[in-house]
Image (cartoon, rainbow, N blue to C red; front, side, top):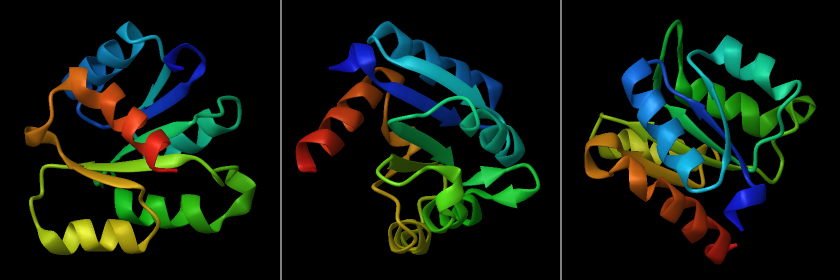
Length: 128
């Protein structure tokens, strides 16, 4: 159940990151957050998430490139981790690219309330 699940939020917007972190922590998840790809990689050295919420637009890089790296580089330890891509870009090509590169889910930020993020994780677990 939620109490033993680790979640990593990768989001450069501090207000969104804090809202997501609070919503997940209030639901019993252990939550870490990163604001860049560099911080994500550093967090992965000591924190093993069950799910990563990954923003598409990150400073200096694309979240889609980070997704590709997470899925193809076994040394990062992300095999078996759910990765949900977050964006404000309501473009089908972005969603298609995310799914083609191994995302387990795709969310348009404006379409979801922070309190619904635990439901996203539960849905992924039910589908696997």
